[in-house]
Length: 328
Image (tube, rainbow, N blue to C red; front, top):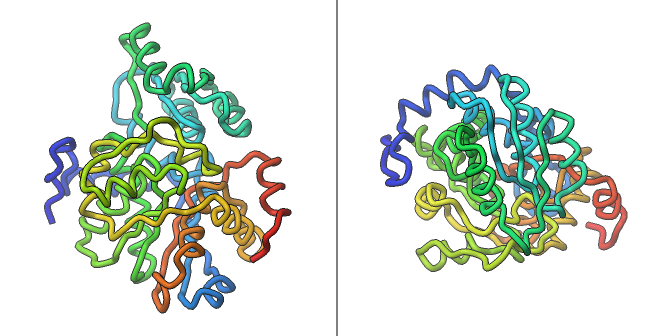
């Protein structure tokens, strides 16, 4: 299988993916696989959760950030993130002896802002109605021309780093379907790359918050569509304007479909993880289980792996989610 077929990422070759698969696992934690027995019985399918909530910095983003930053010579890093990529960048910089500034919306989860700072990163908080993350990042890079601008998802090194999770899932068991959360597309692209590199036949379904359904609309239209502004959704890790260009080139042919998940179903899935799987997950991490709740008939009789992408959530948001109705 030849992966070097993406105009925006000619570097994303089989040889490069193999190189990352050999080197990166030494620096990341293996994902945790948890059978979701109660939800499986309720929905009539066999569900396994692949949880990255115990990954370094609490989400899959560390795979991408470490792979990216270990491959660049610059010591000063500028990134933009709603939180998880920022934490991962800050921790990777700490490990690699680098410094970073992370542009973050002022509405980011406080636990994520605090984490960036605890790893030694500078959290540059912005009002997204006044300036975009990309706009502020461009300002900082102009002020520091020797810095490296780390992209959270639209970079072949990010995709390759995330593909290590896909490799773990495909090696763990034979699944009919893998459900991956979709924001900027870095994680879901990595899962597609892993599947294609291994020449597996597993279908990959995206789970996207309904209030920010740009990827779903793009897939249906056959062209990249952007949100007019950062979407208002409980899934803060998926508050993206659009898919990255590299990610779009991978996903438009690599995904079977994208399920749009209402926030209410995301919160119901989060609550289920706490009550019945003993997992603390963030709303974005609950998107995939929310997709099953949204369209249960789609998965009847199948062996399904749902990726829980992380567990970084503000205590107040989490407490409300697990104590509110309706119950499952």
